[in-house]
Image 1: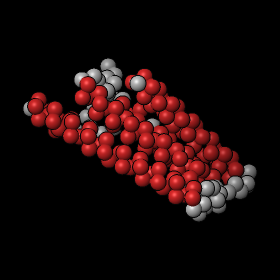
Image 2: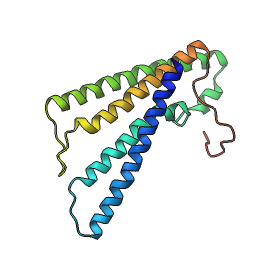
Image 3: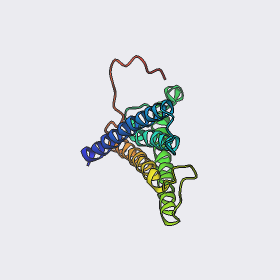
Image 4: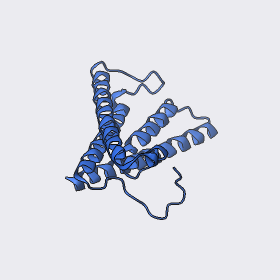
Length: 170
């Protein structure tokens, strides 16, 4: 099960990388289009969709790598017993909140699909298409927090430790 979840995180990270490359391509196309006086409607909206997809799809992998903001200054000051309780509470609360967020993101996608919501920009894209990528990232983040909580309960590490990383200062 753990290998399948890790593969899911890697897959979402791969999709995030594709979305980042797509963002670069769209922006490059926009710059070239302005140079040749072409008008390609909706490029700004597509760049925005790709940036949002990049951010949301990278959430689970960045959580696993410990790249999210953590309050280690507070954690270092707590006694071991209180630290243990605090970490369980934080992981349980984060699991609940991200599951709630993923549920309502799914509901938003479904409503956009049902009501045929279209982008207000010149592109007239059905909004459920870019929202699906946001939903995938939200589901991935909820799974990651639940995985972190289960890992903590089972006593196995969740966060990957990278030795020799001097750029991160918490």
